[in-house]
Image (cartoon, rainbow over all chains, first blue to last red; front, side, top):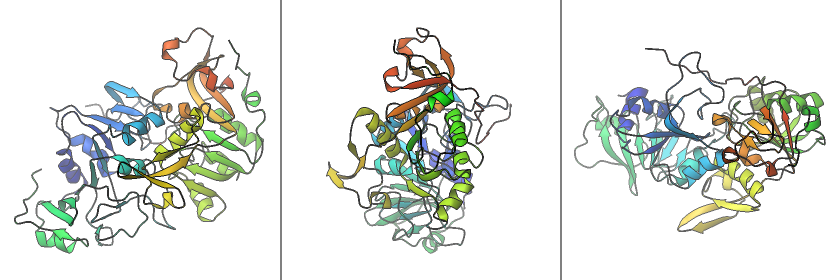
Length: 217
Length: 233
């Protein structure tokens, strides 16, 4: 079973040379820590920066340079700033190569719910609806089950949707799965996790083709 | 040169009244028009509709207007940092319209650019699209969204001149340029108000034609919402 850093580490393998990448809040943010040094990648933050760098050293924080999580950040050589409409032109116009975001639920047809729990959590969708509606390449990073132990990979989402039929790949603490027309196809299992464990933790239709390799991370 | 300069925030906000619709630049607390907000608190206008990506925090930004119950309706994409906001929303005191962030930016830009409406894929198939016109383009479904209509846009820029030309800094730019000229009156507060002719015309982000009033803000706290640092190795 992976921890959050393990999930981020596995997703980092999906980040390719020359990619512009948008990282959501939570586990996705950790992905930046595990991207190989020998490839060139630029991180976009939808509040208006491309070429995002690490957090600043203490004393060098700038209220005018933050990421979409409102955290103080730095920029790398070659970075640029832009307004919100241009930022979403990059996203809606499919100029961003890879979008990684968290989810509360994903359904077997690729629907995603991650912005609202009616009557409980109503913080808003931020840029998530724009991202999932337009991105060609979306990876969801999340735990396989919720705190109560119930599956987050469902036949049908129970929470209000963020987008329909948009998720392509899911990396959880237990498995790597691809969304196919017939359901979740199990591609890899986490170290120490059996196919049976994954079957028990997955409510949606699971497609298991022959041998399922263990992730190499 | 058409002079847009006003002496202070009181002059800049002449004409604001109860029940108006205002736009506020800023992302989180970064690039918010602090001086205009402070003046609106002082004037204690009521029944306001506020278009802003976020709603501030409990004791800063638009949170200050919420504390005095000045806001009737918020139009935002993310409001997760404000307990008073959540309380007023769940109790029904505050009307809230949550919309996708890119749609929010584009509804500003459409108002600025003279487009009455536009189609976007964002929100299709979700509750955001309920009751809205949808249309298929190239095999993909889109939702019709309308340009905002607002009385005032309150903008924060880094540098400006009396002609109303503006330069923004870092990610404090965000929604600010998109809201310039998107309301009947655009009011800009700047950190540095420079003599006309000082700013290089090649480097202007927003030309003065989109601005009606500009003033030097008396005070900028520029509060940091999430102070994150790394240790020196």
